Length: 343
Image (tube, rainbow, N blue to C red; front, side, top):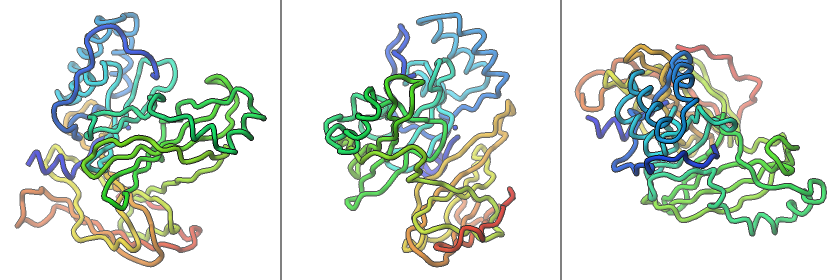
């Protein structure tokens, strides 16, 4: 049962040097949705008040104790320890074999959110470790030379990690994965003028082994190469453009053993599965549940259906508790898209 939930279920959303103290622990097993933690604002405020004046090991112990007292799972605490006791995983997007962890760093002065690529080899990769990015091809790009004339101090900086548009996962022809990540090009400082964005791909083979990064190019400010629309009304049509990424949102509570599952294969000539994510409700109530978010990309024009069932994976001969069917129309006029309400 636990293994099935790990395979199908999902969880829910400085650059600063680590504080002095114990070395970060390396995860011994795959990180799953049970490692998510979503504290209420009041709870996080109390932890911040208690721990912020401390430093080093005392700070780390205070933060861990606060998580445990607020009901964080042992897996959530273990994940926090694995990243140096400085943050927690708010969301997990299943992409398999390498997944995306959306991490919150509540004590940073800036950049309080980040992305980690997890469950591969190595077990964790911080996309904001700029040492992983090769600057050679970036600086050879003619667009860089043009920006340099206008912005003499232009340099790579961490991107905005507060949204869910990135990282974008793509499958490679050999079965591997590549994660597209965007970085800001700023003119010399964190608060300086935005000159544009640089894209890099983090590439993995089909076993999840990291093979390196690849420079993709420069975008102008205001451009959005990747956009996502969210839909949560299975009774209505979902109209999307070809090439657009969209998300289907459904209420879920994996503590009951129930999860959403596809009931039949996708028409991959029209839609392609990108990933799943479970986001817990922000509440102190144990077992309150949350939302499963299924992300797809429209890869061709036409009409198809995405059928899902809400069931326990081990109950093979039992009718599902709920079903949902989304009618997908790809290539239509986006003005026809209906306003959808939560079911």
